[in-house]
Image (cartoon, rainbow, N blue to C red; front, side, top):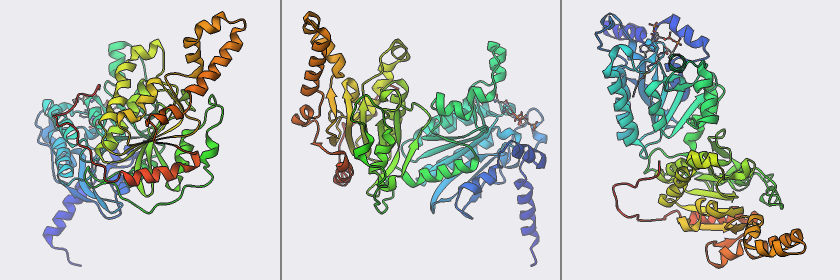
Amino acid sequence: MVVSKKIKELQEKRNQILLGGGQQAIEKQKAMGKRTARERILGLLDKDSFIEYDLFVEHDARDFDMDKKSLPSDGVIIGSGTIHGDPVAVYAQDFTVAGGSLGMMHSRKITKIMDYALKMRMPLIGINDSGGARIQEGVNSLAGYGEIFFRNTISSGVIPQISVILGPCAGGAVYSPALTDFVFVVENISKMFITGPEVIKTVLGEEISMEDLGGARVHSEVTGNAHFFAKSEEECFAQIKRLLTFIPWNNSTGTKIIESCEPDPSYDPEKIVPDDPTLPYDVRDVIRSVVDKSDFFEVMEMYARNMVIGFARIGGVTAGFVANQPMEMAGVLDVDSSDKAARFIRFCDAFNIPIITFMDLPGYLPGVDQEHAGVIRHGAKILYSYCEATVPKITVILRKAYGGGYIAMGSRHLRADFVFAWPAAEIAVMGPEGAANIIFRKEIMSSDDPEEMRKQKVAEYKTKFANPYVAASRGYVDAVIEPGETRRFLLHAIKSTANKAVKMISKKHGNPPF
Ligand code: HXC
C-alpha cells in the first residue's frame, strides 16, 4: 500500500514519541517489575478502546538547559477509552521521561483530562509514577499541583476518582491521591511519602528504606492511605475493574442493576454467630450469607480490621456494607475504624449507594492511647456521616449493641430507615457484667456470698435489658428476625427504599469533624 508523505511523517513522529524516554529507561522500568505508562493504560482499558490526546505536547521550560531537552508527551499520557464498555478518562505518568516529574505542560495535560472527566461525568483513573514536582520548573510545577488538587476537590462526590500508585509518588504529589476516592497500591512498586529517606536522614539522622517508610504494605496496613493492595500490576488492574462493576459512573446515573442471584448456601446465617457472646466469628461470612452469589468485595481489607467495609449486591442492587468485625478487638470502634467507616459512608451517600450496617460491638475502645489519639473527634466522624447520609440506611443488630457504639453504628436515632435485630441482640448502655457491678454494687458488697449475688444480678440485668425486646417495644427496632430471614428482610428494605426522598435543611455545607 502506498502511504502518502504526510501520513508517513505523522507515523514517524508518533513512533518517535511512543518510545518515551528511550530504550534504556524502558529497560530500567521493566527491571523494577513495572510496565510502561502506555502498556498500563492498554492493560487496564477495554481492548482497542483507548484514544490518546495531546501526544505532541512538549514542555516549554527554558532554565537549566531544559530548552535543549525534548521530553516526549511531557512525561504523561492522557486519553479516554472504556472499561466494561463504559467510558473512563485516564492519565498515566511516564517515569521513563524525566522520572515522570510534573512540569507545567505535564500538569496541564492532567488537568485537561480531569476537566474532561468531570464535564462528561465519567470516572477518572490516574496512574501515578513520578519523582514529583519537576525541580527545573520551580513554581510552575507547584502551581500545576495546586490546579490538580483543586480539580480533585471539585470533582469529589460527582465522579469516582481512582488513584493507582505504580512507582514513586513523592512530596506534595501524594495529596492528589489522598483527595481521591480509592487508592490502589502494588507490593514492592508503590511508594508514597511526603519527605523521602534522604531528607529524613539529613534532618533527623534516621535511616529508613523507601519500602518501610511508605511502601504498599505500610499504606495498606498502617496509614490507611491505600484502599486496595495487590501483588502485581495485573492483579491491581483486575481489582480496579472489579470495583467498577459495583460503583456508578457518576453521582446521578445510579449503579447498574443486574439479575438477582441467591447466596452460596454453604454460608448459613443460623450457624455463623456463636451462641456464647464472648466468642468471635467472621462478620464477612454473615455478609456473604445474605448477598448475591456471596460475592463481597472488601475495601481497605488490611487496615483497621475491627471494621469491615465493602460492596456487594443484594437483589441485583449494589449496597455498601459497614460491619463490626468481632474477630478483631471484639469489633470495637476506635480512631482508625471510625475514620475508615466514615469516609466509606460518605462515598456511598455521594454516589447513591444504599448502606447496610451489621452491628456487633462492645462500644468505643477505652484507654489513654485512644483518648489522646482523638477518639472523640474521630469517633464523631462516623456519627456525622451516618446522620448526613440520605441514601437508604438499613441496620441489622447481630449481637452486642452497647453504649455509644449502638448509637454510632447506623441506629434508628441517626435515621436508619430499617433496623432489624437478631434474637441474640443485646442492646444496652453497657455489657451485663460491667452494668451489674455498677448498679448493684451495694447489694453485691453487702451480700454473704458476693460472687453468687453478682452472678444473680448479671443474670437479672441480662433478662431485663440485654435483649432486643426493650428496643423493639419502643419501635427503635422494626422487627426481631431469625438470622435465616435476614436476606428476605434486606431485599424488602432495599426494594422499599428505592425511591427514598429526603430533604435536608438547605445550607452551604456542614462542618464535619475532619
Ligand atoms: C526533575 C527528576 C525528578 C524531579 C526524578 N527526576 N525526579 N527530574 N524533577 N522531581 C529525573 C532524574 O533526574 C532522572 O533523570 C530520572 O528522573 C530518573 O530518576 P532517578 O533518580 O534516576 O530514578 P530512581 O533512582 O528510580 O529514583 C526515583 C526517585 C528519585 C526516588 C523518585 O528520582 C527522587 O528522589 N526524586 C526526587 C523526589 C522529590 O523529592 N521530588 C520533589 C518532591 S517536592 P535522568 O535524566 O538522569 O534520567 C514536590 C513538591 C510538590 O513534589 C508540592 C505540591 C504541593
